[in-house]
Length: 249
Image (tube, rainbow, N blue to C red; front, side, top):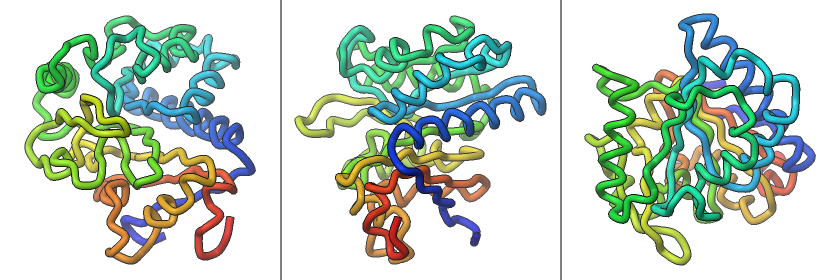
């Protein structure tokens, strides 16, 4: 695999994608804790990650001492209270994170109940800088990302000003359908990660996945700009999402 290329694995369906992602997260978490005593991970919203969180909480790994050393963040968040069904944090918490042995001060969420997205972005950046004190950019051990049908990832949408942010760790945006205020990690942060894992499921994502993996620079969807120079990119997709790849699913 050439430097900067994404490593693709294809699974029968979204359930298998979620289980494989859970296993990958656990493997990398245990390795990071052995190496440096902590594991920093940025989580994603979406239906496939929900199944991942359920998988983590339903097995023996849920009772592991690993979780005391894990710091969880989010790649993006809608500016809504945590109890809102649209909250990525709230959804992940209900799906399984609440059943893990996470230390309360190791859960670093976006303060979505803050009415102003810019203020929420500043508060989240302060949270990040507290954890990654002194770093030019935070270096996550693993970042989980989804992929939108339009090629967006986190809350980095086509044409968004947030895509061009090169100094801040977080950015405010008003994107989506319908548009709503959001907070997102910026591309320099994503591209500072040790590893990025895209989770892609469903035929609606087939065209975007083909663009993500395309060698053609004309297919420059936002997600394709996530290429950590000192990290790796993995893509776990189901057969439906992989249907439009040149070599087939």
